Amino acid sequence: MAEEKTGWEKEELSKGSFAFEVLRAIAITLGLSLLWAMEAARDRFFRLLDQWHIPSFRWRKASAFPPGPSQR
Image (cartoon, rainbow, N blue to C red; front, side):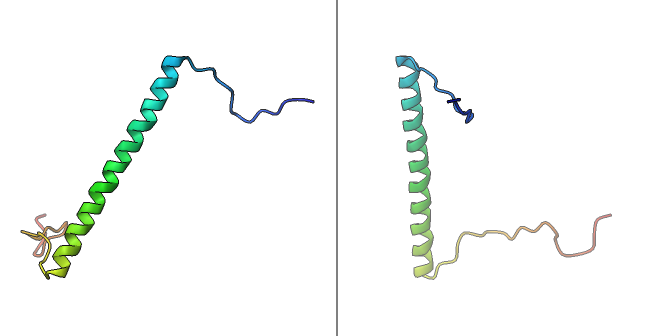
């Protein structure tokens, strides 16, 4: 029976490279968890502002196309 090629080949990892891959996966997971926590805190903050009827911070209105005649 012939072996099928799936594009995945088995690779033997040394103890050091295995530990590196585990630490890398943990770091990625922690990074994504931090982003999720920051987004949750931001969401709570803006929901609180909405509840108190406080507008979000907008000191000046920025526009890519300001009113008035063109400068050309």
